[in-house]
Image (cartoon, rainbow, N blue to C red; front, side, top):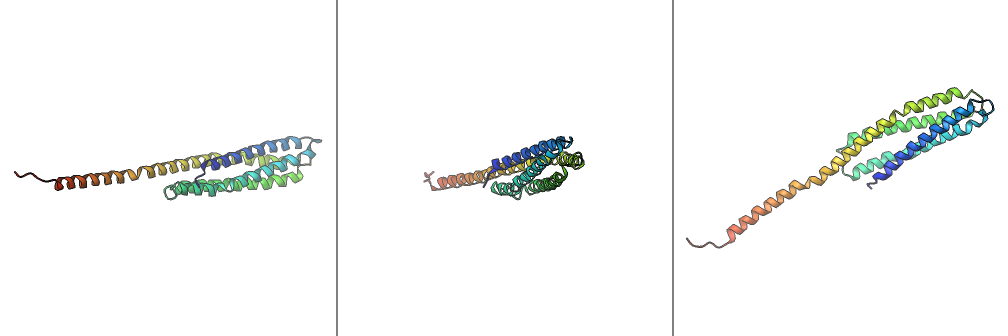
Length: 188
């Protein structure tokens, strides 16, 4: 089924979940920085990991949905390279998100110890910021895929036009030939 808005909604939802994960991670870092607040740090750290798992789960059906959309629009062969680029970038992002989720859960185990959780938390935050470089590549690949699908769909709508013109011309020639040869001629 050609359900393009659902794909865009899932991508946006995943972006929101990653952003919320960054916020939860920042709260965990801030809580771990104090002696008396550190015991509250594992909860936002686990929330950060849970949000990353949720983002990965939201992105899981996107690859199949985009593949179905491209096939539905009749651009499977025309846009195969754009589809492959997008799916590979999406798989890379999902892999990094899953690794970050596991690291967040592991860091939550020691986050209750004041200042002990700072190093893994900052590493996780740094990795998430570096991972943000994957998001523009996904946007670029998604835009290229959408443009390719739209161009293929436009070409498919225009493709019958030459056939229509050829059949109309043939019909006109046959009609003129028939009318010309079927009328009675006056003797000279």
